[in-house]
Image (cartoon, rainbow, N blue to C red):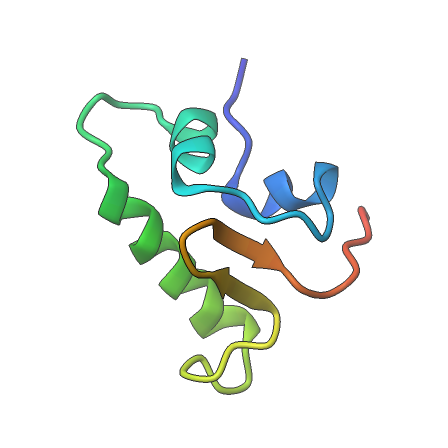
Length: 76
């Protein structure tokens, strides 16, 4: 079974922050994926989705909790 992509995880838990640990467990395909790998993936997503990645409005960081997709998610 294929692992979900990072963006697909928010569809099931809209408006709920997802912790780094949860994201790691869901998308880990290799044992060498580390905590900071999630940050890199979030940064890449922000660069693609945000008008200004340095002031994110789509993917927000909930300090001490995780990341939250702050807009409505619609499956296509």
